[in-house]
Image 1: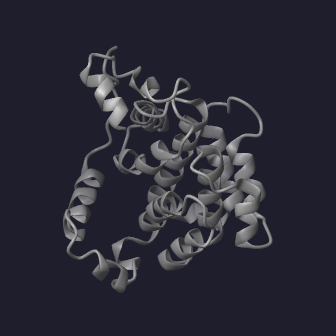
Image 2: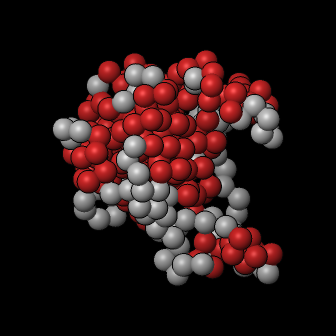
Image 3: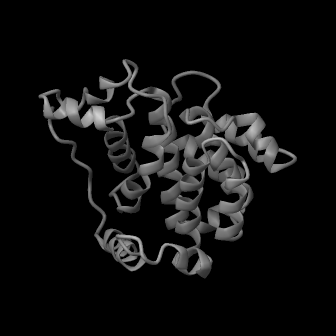
Length: 226
């Protein structure tokens, strides 16, 4: 991120700053981790949601794997917000996302990995099947499989994510974003909220910002010209 900002400040076009640190544009999960804020905004269509998510991601993570992971996270979050009942069929949810996303750049597609891991015998098998490194192609499918397996409560989902190990803060952020969308702030254990009560911004301020984003009327996404 720091290298991207420095490149932009030195005159590099925003579309190209992602390659300031890695020539391929980073295969990491950072774009997927932060895309929840984009998906929280209501867009006029799925295509506009994906365009907004892609633009927000490729500023720092323009590798196809990183973009694919962020688009899956954005679409899954939007489905959880708008149609939480879809989680009654995890396979059906994956099918919905698969139909909406552009074709994956190369097999095995991440959603295929989620399907396999979702049916694993144990949660630790999810880590073995997917991997848990900072690479988007590993940690993001692992997070999605854990969420689809363990979404009954916020605490169950995030605790299961934490037990995977690896890039655990990113995996928990991905799962926590989805579980928060499903259960709301009231579903987060009070002791967890108490632990961050003195952080800035506060929990109340974050909730107010989220509520304000959700309250905005659906809008099209218009990308800034090159």
